[in-house]
Length: 172
Image 1 (cartoon, rainbow, N blue to C red):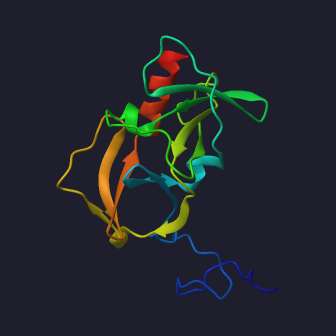
Image 2: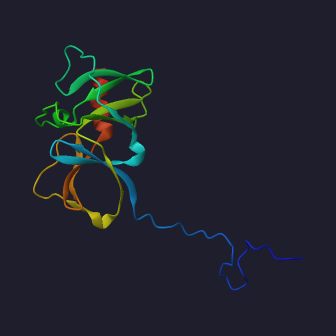
């Protein structure tokens, strides 16, 4: 009878072709660097459903200034927000090359499958390693940020997507 190649050898070392139980160390995260006013938003690649050309939203009444309205995407009405305004920063809103980053739901609330965020151009894909990110000790995070950082020397923000989506749910 032939020994199973998946079994370990008698001395405890794995045989050639045997599965190992050690998990590979994750040392990079697939991210999108999304340009906004004066810096980048750092988002995990899986958090972004799509980047689309800017569409003028249908404006709602009696809403906070950061809530820009709704736009149609894939037969759904998606709320559109200004990251800068929801983060208590000035928002010009008419920059060149505007796009909308459509963020997937992270709250688990079925009433809000997606949220759009205005961007100022196309994002860049980056496999982010720990040594490419550094804390921005000279500035403090706003209410919509988990942290302000530098990515390879560029100013960036790690947005608090769950908090942003909770604020949108309060408005819609």
